[in-house]
Amino acid sequence: MKKLISLLTLAGLLTFATATFAQDEKTEEQAAPAQTEAVAQDEPMAADETVPEATEEKPFHQQLKIKIIEGGPIFMGFLLVALILGLAIAFERIIYLNLATVNTKKLLTKIENALNEGGVDAAMDVCRNTRGPVASIFYQGLSRYPEGIDMVEKSVVSYGSVQMGQMEKGLTWISLFIALLPMLGFMGTVIGMIGAFDAIEAAGDINPAVVAGGIKVALITTVGGLIGAMILQVFYNYILGKIDTLVNTMEDASISLVDILVDYERKSNN
Image (cartoon, rainbow, N blue to C red; front, side, top):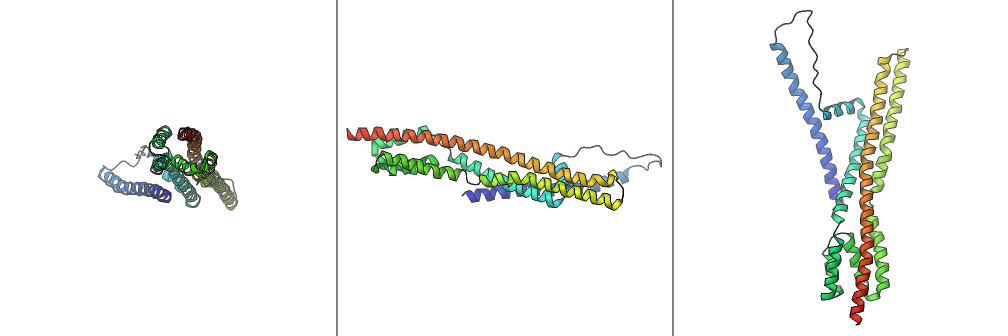
C-alpha cells in the first residue's frame, strides 16, 4: 500500500510537469502564426519607423521553464529528479502518518467497555478492527495479559519501538536528497565557471558577453539546488513533528492502557 501511494504520487508529479511543459510549447506554437498574421495585415511602416517591443510579462511557469533550460539539461534534470523523488517520499510519509493518527481517548474508552463486557478477547477485537500503530501496540499488550502486567508493559515498549521505526521509514532518503540537491547545484556552479574560463581562454580577452553565459548557468544551478533543498527541508521538519506527536500520543495511551488493565485485574480478583 505504501509503495503504491509513493508510485502514484511520483507519477502524478511527473505527469503534471510534463503537461505543463507541453502546454507551454503548444501555446508558443499557436502564438507564433497569430503574430505573423497580425504583422502581415498591418500597413507598411516607414523606413525610419521602429516596431515597439512586446512588454507582456510571461507567466511564472514559463519563466521557470526558461531558467531550467538555461541552467543546462543535465544538471537541472538531476535536480528535478532528486526533488521529485524527495517529494514523492515525503507525500507518502505524510499520508501514512495522517492515516495512522487516531483518537486515543475514544479508543481507550472502547477498550475499557469491551473489557468490562467481554473480557480481554473483546478488547483485542476492538484493537484488531482499528487502524494505526496505537491500536497495534494495544493488541500486542493485550495478547500478553495472561502472562501478567509486567509482560504487558514490556510488550508495549518493545512493539512501540517497532512502530516508531516504521514511522521513520524513508526519512533517510529525504535527508539524502536534502544534502544532495545543494551539492548538485554547486557542482553545476563549478562546471559553469570552468566553462566561463575556457571561453575567456579561447577568446584571449575578458569579454563580459563571453563570461556571462557560464556564470549565468553556474548561478541558476546553485539557486535550483538551494530552492529544492529548502522545499524538502520544510516537508522533512513537518514529518518529524508529526512523528514526535504520534510517539508522545502512543506513550501516553500505553500508560493509560496499563492503568485500565490494572483496574480490570483488581475487579476480576474481587
